[in-house]
Each structure stands twice: as C-alpha cells, then as structure tokens.
Length: 253
Ligand SMILES: [Zn+2]
Image (tube, rainbow, N blue to C red; front, side, top):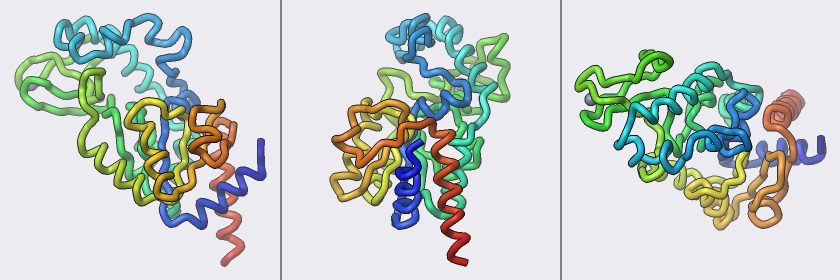
C-alpha cells in the first residue's frame, strides 16, 4: 500500500482542527453487507423502482417485506470491521468530529462511534407511518412475520429513507454544518455521486478544506475535488492511520 500517503494522512489529521468522515456502502462491504447496486445484488432481483419506493410500500407493504426481511437478516448478521472501529477510535482520540453516513446498517454505532449522522435513516428502528410509533427492529421477528404496529396494527416500515421520501431534516442540517466547519474531509467507501452526500465534499472544499479519499477505485471526485486517493480497503488503511497517529503521540510524551 502507498505508505507515504498513509503517513501524509495521519499528519494531516493530527494538524486538522476539525476532521469529518463521509462513508458509504464500501466500508460495510468488508462486513459482509453487499452493495445492493452491484452485479447480482438485491437490485437485480427486486426492482428498486417498486421495492425501494415509498409508493410501492404504501401499495403493498406485505410484498415489500419479502425484500426488507432479506436486508434486515444480512444486517443482523454483520459486525463492524476494522474500518468502522478505526473511525470510532479516531473520535475517541479527539481526532474525528463526526461520521456522516449513507449506510443504514448501524455498524458505526456498533463499533463505538458516538456522533453518527445518518442521511438515509437506519434499519435498527421500525416506524409506523399511521400513528408515529417507533421501536427497535430487534424487538420484532422479521424473519417469520410482517411486523405490525403494537399501537394500531399497521404494517411497520424500517426507519430508512425510501425513494420518494425526503432526507431527514436534522441529518441534512447537521451534516452541512459539519461540512462548512471542517478543514479535512475523509471520503470512505463511496463515490459520493448521489445528493446530498455528493455536496458534502464540495461544500467543505469551497471553504478551504482538504478532501482525502479512501476508495478502492477512482471516483468522480478523484483529481477534481479530492487532494489524493488512498486506493485500499478502509479496513486496512484506517487502522494503519490510527497506528501512525498513536506512534506520533507516543513520541511526544
Ligand atoms: Zn401505529
């Protein structure tokens, strides 16, 4: 791996006044959660126009649960990987202000990250569109049944953003506030092409922030928005960055 770039990143994180991370599907692939858009992925078996659209859910929620239970089963079985853990460690060390994520798997929180801004909601909770009930997914048997609201018996919906639904206002507000204040943005496991995630790196950069990618492949950000790209799995690169930071701290004491 490009060790020079890892050292450079560790030094930049150390010098930064406010670092934020923007994460996407790529960081959770290493935890066994496939990118639904990949070949053979969920969207090749279930048409997202129908199954991931809020209108489809309103039309026939029981049918949509055929797909939802697959997603929830995969997420239930997944555990945070060293990439998630390294971000939690950076926060703990005082080097990371927040994680802004497009993922709905809750793995950042499971790894110990405290400030997680979820753009697309979370599968950890189910909500009732009729009466507003909200409860933990864990409390329901989603494998064998279609979960129903304990208050009004309507079919529950994961608290994730479906197509046709707005991004949660709080998440938008917080994320862009973070982006405006940051002087270093780590873009991890995402090509950041879909709004609003796509606007986070450019918003920060317009105000003078540096942008560093940790992605397996080059993205539309590469060479335009990002200063450089570390082409490696997050689960390998991030723990090395944390180790480099710890080395430097050790040297100061
Ligand atoms: Zn209800």
